[in-house]
Length: 291
Image 1 (cartoon, rainbow, N blue to C red):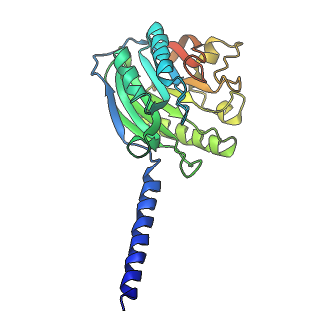
Image 2 (image 1 turned 90 degrees about the horizontal axis):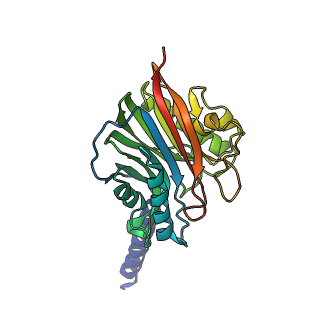
Image 3 (image 1 turned 60 degrees about the vertical axis):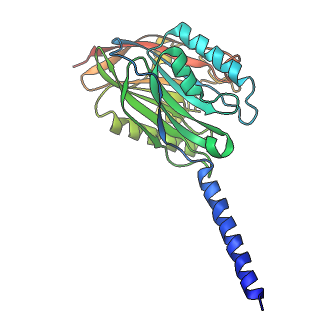
C-alpha cells in the first residue's frame, strides 16, 4: 500500500543526487571570475619597460616543493625588477593559498588574476593566469580561448591596461593548451583575434606559455607586428624554456601600436628547476614613435 510512495521518494532522491553530481561537475573546473590582487600602485611606469613571464608549475596533486619554489620565484623576479609580470599556472592549493597574490604583495605590484581550471572552494585546488604591474591596471578582463581542449580543461587570457610615460599599453597573459596540432593552433588564432580586438590600436605585450615551438606553423604565422622579444635580442641563442622537452615554448610578444612601435633592447631566460619546470623569459624594450 505504501510501496508507490516509497518508490517515489527513491526516484526523487536519485534525481536530486544526479542534480547535485551534475552541479559539482559543472563547477569543479570553471574559469573566472576576475580577482584584483596586490596593493594599489602609482604610475606611470617608464617608457623603457622590463617585462617578465613565468609559468609557476602547480604540479597538481603533488605540489612538490611549491612554497619553496614560490619563494625562489619571488627572489628571481626581485633581481630582475620588472615593471610588468605575466604569470601562468598561478595556483591556489593547500601549500600556497594564492600564488599570484603572494607574489604581487612580495614585489609591491598590483594586478588581476582569473581562474582557468579547478575550483578551490570545491576541491581545494585551482590555477589560472595573472597580470601584475608596478602601476595600476585599468580595464582588467579575461576571456576563455576557443576551442576547448577537453571537458575540464580551460585556457584563458587575462589582460589590463597600464600607463607608461609613452602612453597606455595593454598587457595580456595566457596559457595555450599542450594538445598538439589543430587545437593549439586554433587557440593561438583565437588569442590573436582577441588581442587585436581588445587592444584597440594600442601597443600591447602578449606573454605566456604557448606550448608551441617557434618553428611550428602557428608561431611562424603570427602577425608581422608581433615581435618575438627574445629572438630579436638573441637571434642565435636556443632559449629553451621547457625543462622537460628542451624546447622554447614560452614567449614575450611585443605588439606595435598605431603610431608607435617597440624597440627591443635586451631579453633572456631566467630560473631553473628550483622555481618551475619552465624557465621564465624577460625582455627590456622601449616604445618609440613610428609614422
